[in-house]
Image 1: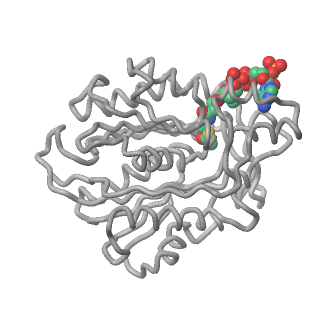
Image 2 (image 1 turned 90 degrees about the vertical axis):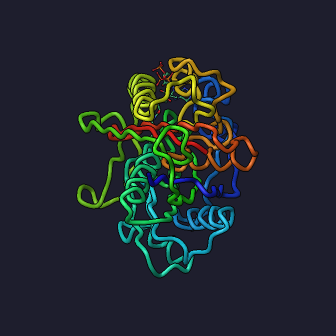
Length: 323
Ligand code: ACO
């Protein structure tokens, strides 16, 4: 059985760090409200002129270096973003050019905060089908560009950043002890568009638009859908929650993360939490969390790592892999 094994991870966060106190000076909000409702303490914002592809290229270079590969060994790039530099070409092709890679495929995946899970599952499917042997999977966002800075209920929650992993085809036994991606589960339900969307776009307003969210309604869906998709994916892999060594969730809100872990019966010392320092970086949050935890040496070979995410669409899903 062909399996997609993570060879290396990398990430990049813009230099500018903005503490909650920055918002206290501008809006009717408090550090206490932001911390207690979301778990967020600070976030990074891209500098003027710094684009999603700039962040993505730096994360991609770091992941390649960690993998010990050069660009010629990559067969393709799958990049998840909702904040591309341009309407087209795909940010993935800009990363490709930035890496000096002139062969292979490069395309973007758009599933908002679930984007990295969707990208990872797609790259894995291509690897298992024999269409590629090594794929770079990136999540990169500059959500600061689509914030309504007068809306305290959204602009305090998001941040910018990028994370990347390199997947390589390796032969496994076909059971749940194999290294690499064991199972994935993807879902969308477009009837919930109004809960979380950007109010502009090429074929509607002709502008980039700004993020609109009914946070409490998204919250209501989150814990239930995330614990369900996580259990589905574990079932597909022939495993259960007690086998999980690390939960690496989308970092939108510490209360959603704790609620999901609780519902699954996972103790919090098995959960990677970066939301306090990164805020919600949408499709970048999982690869950022993977890379940060990896650089801290937290994952041991053979550890079962479970990722899950939900976001605009609604779209949600989960990937289980063995490190
Ligand atoms: N400071 C102070 N008060 C605020 C702020 C703020 N920054 N923002 C909102 N409030 C107020 C509201 O106006 C409301 O006041 P009211 O009761 O007088 O009307 C009160 O705080 C409570 O608001 P709620 O929205 O009910 O607060 P809640 O506890 O639900 O927390 C939050 C809000 C943090 C947004 C939460 O609902 C959440 O995290 N939701 C999910 C977000 C998410 O997961 N999104 C999906 C991924 S993102 C993506 O896909 C792009």
